[in-house]
Length: 158
Image (cartoon, rainbow, N blue to C red):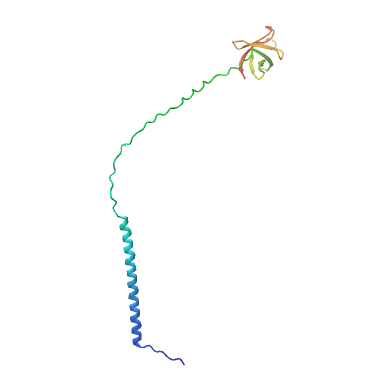
């Protein structure tokens, strides 16, 4: 058998009184902590709102210094020069097409070629390698001064 334990009404009142006192102490402790936190927060905002003293700003006129710099004058750019290529006045006949346009190459520089239109269609075409002279008017005439062969008028140089 177990001993039965019965609580007395006095023990219950004491227990209730102790619980109420502990609850009040807990509430008071929380309130004090709340007040401490609030005062620290107020101190922080007060420090941030401190009015800064105004310092008068004096205006200083800037001084401008001019430094002389000695520079070597740039050399003038060389003027563009046209390249002159000496071209021989003698041209070698290469071929003639169906439209009576002949092709010639320079005897001094075979890379220089020109085309010319036949002036004398009724005369016979020259043999390949026949030499022609180019005069100032742009006409190719046979070097042999033979009137037997055709003459050509310059179309364009290539």
